[in-house]
Image (cartoon, rainbow, N blue to C red; front, side, top):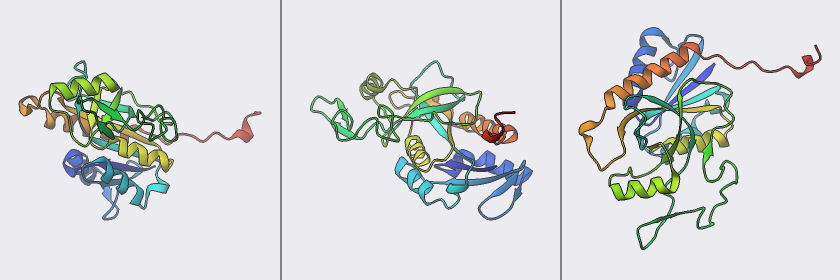
Length: 236
Protein backbone atom coordinates (compact mmCIF):
# COMPACT_ATOMS: atom_id res chain seq x y z
CA UNK A 1 0.00 0.00 0.00
CA UNK A 2 1.03 3.58 -0.61
CA UNK A 3 0.37 5.52 2.59
CA UNK A 4 0.99 9.18 3.43
CA UNK A 5 1.54 10.33 7.01
CA UNK A 6 0.45 13.98 7.20
CA UNK A 7 1.54 16.08 10.18
CA UNK A 8 1.76 19.78 10.92
CA UNK A 9 5.19 19.41 12.58
CA UNK A 10 7.89 16.75 12.47
CA UNK A 11 7.86 16.81 16.29
CA UNK A 12 4.46 15.12 16.33
CA UNK A 13 5.60 12.10 14.30
CA UNK A 14 9.27 11.95 15.31
CA UNK A 15 8.95 8.53 17.05
CA UNK A 16 7.37 7.11 13.89
CA UNK A 17 10.13 8.55 11.70
CA UNK A 18 12.77 7.02 13.98
CA UNK A 19 10.97 3.67 13.79
CA UNK A 20 10.84 3.80 9.99
CA UNK A 21 14.55 4.67 9.89
CA UNK A 22 15.49 1.70 12.08
CA UNK A 23 12.96 -0.95 11.04
CA UNK A 24 12.23 0.02 7.45
CA UNK A 25 14.26 1.10 4.45
CA UNK A 26 14.67 4.64 3.25
CA UNK A 27 13.95 4.13 -0.43
CA UNK A 28 14.45 7.79 -1.33
CA UNK A 29 14.71 11.20 0.29
CA UNK A 30 10.89 11.31 0.22
CA UNK A 31 9.69 7.88 1.33
CA UNK A 32 10.30 4.65 3.24
CA UNK A 33 9.53 1.02 2.51
CA UNK A 34 8.08 -0.72 5.56
CA UNK A 35 6.20 -4.01 6.01
CA UNK A 36 5.29 -4.09 2.33
CA UNK A 37 4.07 -0.49 2.37
CA UNK A 38 5.42 2.64 0.72
CA UNK A 39 5.29 5.33 3.43
CA UNK A 40 5.41 9.02 2.51
CA UNK A 41 5.76 11.46 5.45
CA UNK A 42 4.55 14.97 4.65
CA UNK A 43 5.10 17.92 7.02
CA UNK A 44 2.65 20.67 6.12
CA UNK A 45 3.19 23.43 8.67
CA UNK A 46 0.65 24.57 11.25
CA UNK A 47 -2.90 25.45 10.25
CA UNK A 48 -5.70 24.21 8.02
CA UNK A 49 -4.71 26.41 5.06
CA UNK A 50 -1.15 25.04 4.96
CA UNK A 51 -2.41 21.49 5.35
CA UNK A 52 -4.91 21.73 2.50
CA UNK A 53 -2.37 23.45 0.24
CA UNK A 54 0.32 20.87 0.97
CA UNK A 55 -2.10 18.04 0.21
CA UNK A 56 -3.14 19.68 -3.07
CA UNK A 57 0.50 20.07 -4.12
CA UNK A 58 1.56 16.60 -3.00
CA UNK A 59 2.61 14.79 -6.17
CA UNK A 60 1.84 11.32 -4.76
CA UNK A 61 -1.72 12.25 -3.73
CA UNK A 62 -3.50 10.72 -6.79
CA UNK A 63 -1.86 7.34 -6.13
CA UNK A 64 -2.41 7.03 -2.38
CA UNK A 65 -4.26 4.10 -0.87
CA UNK A 66 -4.55 5.92 2.46
CA UNK A 67 -3.65 9.28 3.98
CA UNK A 68 -3.24 9.51 7.76
CA UNK A 69 -3.36 12.89 9.49
CA UNK A 70 -1.45 12.58 12.76
CA UNK A 71 -1.10 15.12 15.53
CA UNK A 72 -2.00 16.20 19.03
CA UNK A 73 -5.28 17.79 20.07
CA UNK A 74 -7.09 19.45 22.92
CA UNK A 75 -10.17 17.72 24.31
CA UNK A 76 -13.44 19.35 25.32
CA UNK A 77 -14.67 15.95 26.50
CA UNK A 78 -13.48 15.17 30.03
CA UNK A 79 -14.45 11.52 29.60
CA UNK A 80 -11.52 11.15 27.20
CA UNK A 81 -8.23 10.53 29.01
CA UNK A 82 -5.16 12.60 28.24
CA UNK A 83 -2.70 10.52 26.26
CA UNK A 84 -5.45 8.50 24.59
CA UNK A 85 -5.71 8.35 20.80
CA UNK A 86 -8.92 9.17 18.97
CA UNK A 87 -10.23 8.76 15.42
CA UNK A 88 -11.91 11.87 14.01
CA UNK A 89 -14.91 10.92 11.89
CA UNK A 90 -16.44 14.40 11.66
CA UNK A 91 -14.65 17.75 11.54
CA UNK A 92 -15.60 21.31 10.68
CA UNK A 93 -14.12 24.79 10.31
CA UNK A 94 -15.33 26.40 13.51
CA UNK A 95 -14.31 30.04 13.17
CA UNK A 96 -15.29 31.13 9.65
CA UNK A 97 -18.01 33.72 10.11
CA UNK A 98 -18.64 36.85 12.15
CA UNK A 99 -18.53 37.81 15.81
CA UNK A 100 -21.75 39.53 16.80
CA UNK A 101 -22.00 42.61 19.03
CA UNK A 102 -22.93 40.42 22.01
CA UNK A 103 -19.86 38.24 21.51
CA UNK A 104 -21.73 35.30 19.96
CA UNK A 105 -20.52 33.66 16.75
CA UNK A 106 -22.48 33.34 13.51
CA UNK A 107 -20.92 31.01 10.95
CA UNK A 108 -21.12 31.17 7.16
CA UNK A 109 -23.99 28.68 7.10
CA UNK A 110 -26.09 30.74 9.51
CA UNK A 111 -25.30 33.74 7.31
CA UNK A 112 -26.38 31.73 4.23
CA UNK A 113 -23.10 32.54 2.51
CA UNK A 114 -22.38 28.81 2.06
CA UNK A 115 -24.67 25.85 1.42
CA UNK A 116 -24.24 23.55 4.41
CA UNK A 117 -25.02 20.38 2.42
CA UNK A 118 -23.05 21.13 -0.73
CA UNK A 119 -20.25 18.62 -1.31
CA UNK A 120 -17.98 17.96 0.54
CA UNK A 121 -20.08 19.17 3.50
CA UNK A 122 -22.86 17.46 5.42
CA UNK A 123 -24.74 19.95 7.58
CA UNK A 124 -21.60 22.11 7.52
CA UNK A 125 -19.31 19.28 8.66
CA UNK A 126 -16.76 17.16 6.82
CA UNK A 127 -17.90 13.64 7.58
CA UNK A 128 -15.55 10.75 6.81
CA UNK A 129 -18.25 8.19 6.02
CA UNK A 130 -16.65 6.49 3.02
CA UNK A 131 -13.67 4.91 4.75
CA UNK A 132 -12.89 1.40 3.48
CA UNK A 133 -10.67 0.61 6.46
CA UNK A 134 -11.81 -0.12 10.01
CA UNK A 135 -9.95 0.92 13.16
CA UNK A 136 -10.70 -0.09 16.74
CA UNK A 137 -10.13 3.46 17.99
CA UNK A 138 -12.51 5.80 19.86
CA UNK A 139 -14.43 7.91 17.33
CA UNK A 140 -14.92 11.63 17.99
CA UNK A 141 -16.24 14.84 16.47
CA UNK A 142 -13.70 17.64 16.02
CA UNK A 143 -13.52 21.36 15.42
CA UNK A 144 -10.72 23.03 13.49
CA UNK A 145 -9.77 26.53 14.62
CA UNK A 146 -7.17 29.17 13.83
CA UNK A 147 -7.13 30.34 17.44
CA UNK A 148 -7.40 27.69 20.16
CA UNK A 149 -9.90 28.51 22.88
CA UNK A 150 -8.45 29.85 26.12
CA UNK A 151 -11.27 31.43 28.11
CA UNK A 152 -14.25 29.70 29.71
CA UNK A 153 -16.65 32.07 27.98
CA UNK A 154 -15.38 31.22 24.49
CA UNK A 155 -15.24 27.50 25.31
CA UNK A 156 -18.84 27.49 26.56
CA UNK A 157 -20.04 29.30 23.45
CA UNK A 158 -18.31 27.05 20.94
CA UNK A 159 -19.48 23.91 22.72
CA UNK A 160 -23.07 25.15 22.87
CA UNK A 161 -22.97 25.75 19.13
CA UNK A 162 -21.17 22.63 17.89
CA UNK A 163 -21.09 19.96 20.68
CA UNK A 164 -17.66 18.63 19.65
CA UNK A 165 -15.21 16.38 21.49
CA UNK A 166 -11.84 17.86 20.47
CA UNK A 167 -10.23 20.77 18.64
CA UNK A 168 -7.21 20.99 16.35
CA UNK A 169 -5.72 23.54 13.97
CA UNK A 170 -5.45 21.34 10.86
CA UNK A 171 -8.01 18.53 10.73
CA UNK A 172 -10.76 20.09 8.62
CA UNK A 173 -8.21 21.26 6.05
CA UNK A 174 -6.97 17.68 5.76
CA UNK A 175 -10.49 16.25 5.38
CA UNK A 176 -11.46 18.97 2.88
CA UNK A 177 -8.46 18.21 0.65
CA UNK A 178 -8.87 14.43 0.85
CA UNK A 179 -12.60 14.46 0.15
CA UNK A 180 -12.16 16.74 -2.86
CA UNK A 181 -9.33 14.58 -4.22
CA UNK A 182 -11.15 11.31 -3.45
CA UNK A 183 -8.41 10.01 -1.14
CA UNK A 184 -9.12 7.42 1.55
CA UNK A 185 -8.18 9.20 4.76
CA UNK A 186 -8.17 8.97 8.52
CA UNK A 187 -7.38 11.59 11.16
CA UNK A 188 -5.78 10.27 14.36
CA UNK A 189 -5.09 12.53 17.34
CA UNK A 190 -3.29 12.06 20.64
CA UNK A 191 -4.96 14.09 23.38
CA UNK A 192 -2.41 16.34 25.02
CA UNK A 193 -4.64 18.63 27.09
CA UNK A 194 -8.16 19.59 27.99
CA UNK A 195 -9.60 22.73 26.43
CA UNK A 196 -9.89 25.05 29.42
CA UNK A 197 -8.77 28.52 30.50
CA UNK A 198 -5.19 28.44 29.29
CA UNK A 199 -3.02 26.42 31.68
CA UNK A 200 -0.05 24.40 30.42
CA UNK A 201 0.72 22.79 33.80
CA UNK A 202 -1.49 19.78 33.20
CA UNK A 203 -0.58 19.15 29.56
CA UNK A 204 0.63 15.67 28.57
CA UNK A 205 2.26 16.36 25.21
CA UNK A 206 4.99 13.72 25.42
CA UNK A 207 2.52 11.02 26.46
CA UNK A 208 0.09 11.99 23.68
CA UNK A 209 2.82 11.87 21.04
CA UNK A 210 4.17 8.52 22.27
CA UNK A 211 0.72 6.92 22.25
CA UNK A 212 -0.18 8.44 18.89
CA UNK A 213 2.96 7.17 17.20
CA UNK A 214 2.63 3.69 18.69
CA UNK A 215 -0.94 3.57 17.40
CA UNK A 216 0.22 4.49 13.90
CA UNK A 217 3.01 1.90 14.00
CA UNK A 218 0.48 -0.76 15.03
CA UNK A 219 -1.80 0.37 12.22
CA UNK A 220 1.00 0.10 9.65
CA UNK A 221 1.89 -3.34 10.96
CA UNK A 222 -1.66 -4.63 10.46
CA UNK A 223 -3.52 -2.63 7.82
CA UNK A 224 -4.25 -4.38 4.54
CA UNK A 225 -5.56 -3.00 1.28
CA UNK A 226 -9.29 -3.76 0.92
CA UNK A 227 -10.08 -6.41 -1.64
CA UNK A 228 -11.81 -5.12 -4.76
CA UNK A 229 -15.11 -6.85 -5.41
CA UNK A 230 -15.28 -8.54 -8.80
CA UNK A 231 -18.91 -8.06 -9.88
CA UNK A 232 -18.41 -10.44 -12.80
CA UNK A 233 -18.12 -13.29 -10.29
CA UNK A 234 -21.27 -12.45 -8.32
CA UNK A 235 -23.19 -15.28 -10.02
CA UNK A 236 -20.81 -17.95 -8.70
